[in-house]
Length: 271
View (cartoon, one colour):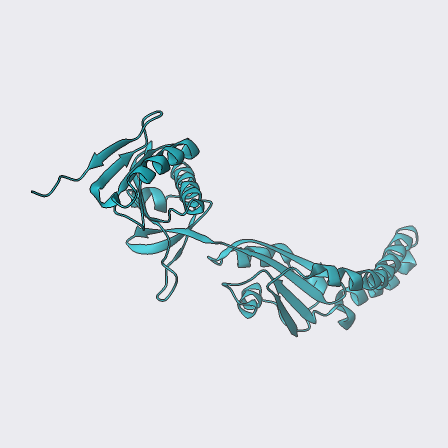
């Protein structure tokens, strides 16, 4: 069996080969339909209809000879095929597409999967993988994606350079509380906005249902962001940081939760 793993979408070339194969398959299917229709009008054709049906379902012409896995990166093509339970020579008609999608979707890295047939003998598996956006500790470290889904334990050697989510209750995370998931999703959106402004975050702390406190990797200053209106608050924060440029170590806290202002708390001067 031929296995092809596509890191990029190469569907245009496949479409050029698809049409002539579709014509051949279409002819066989039309023949089967004509015989079945005739059978409904004439009982003696039952054996002929059954023979054509058996040919279509059992013929080696419709054996699976090639499997294409597209979009996989974290999960190898061979692993996807093994999970799917596909094997050489099986009838393409007997592949349970919905069942295969369900099996593959259980893999922690898989966000979405679509499986389809391309007659006469090709199975195509399109995989969309999850992308870690943060890490949360629930007795162990777990990746969190942009949807707020906690999807996989962080294994030894895997990338840990993501903001750490703190202040959330483990029971809410384990119960997949929709409200908590929405809060995580909004917090990750804030982290992405700040990264675009060159403020990489080391921690996102859920201080209260309506308050986020974040810490950057550049300097140990607590940034109280409140909740919502991120663009305006980030603009005010950056104006104040520009004033304190080179002296950020004197800042303990910047509070952007007040309307149209920033409250700064300074470290006590050493005697």
